[in-house]
Image (tube, rainbow, N blue to C red):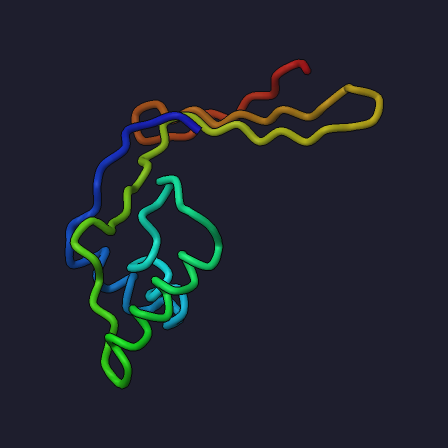
Length: 105
């Protein structure tokens, strides 16, 4: 996919966060995504601390947590085949219409 990416409004992130399972909410608060951690036990300990901190309460959406939306202009669906004659179906947006083309593999 190719297109324009925008950060979603805070209220949309908060609404989506609230719809997630509680364990996912706690994990989102626990994980400092992509940072190096000492070990699995340290991560589990941090998760347990978050779980204790919000015991019996709603889990608030972290300030640094949010989403993005892609407004596509081009989408390609690719399906591999053993013969390598793969299917490649493309959708390109032009003037509020989607043009459908097929590409050679």
